[in-house]
Length: 90
Image (cartoon, rainbow, N blue to C red):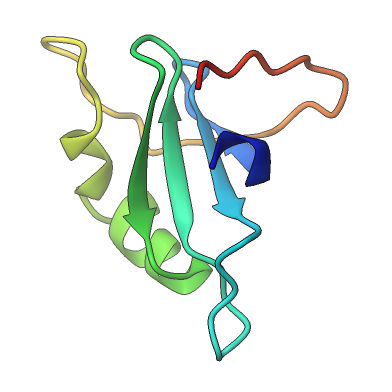
């Protein structure tokens, strides 16, 4: 899956959020995944971009995926830097 992850944003901790380009839905949306760099794990986070905005950016879904004890998600995301080399563990 990692080779098909198309990142569009990163969290304040440097983890990626991206679409899985293999999973296009009938409505044209792609599911969104969270890549945890610390543990090398990929987690589903939303079925569509509107759901991502409502449940992750404006909601509390992101907290389920943050593993650092005592960390509070900021719900702010930066665009992915095109020149950044991604080192995904499979």
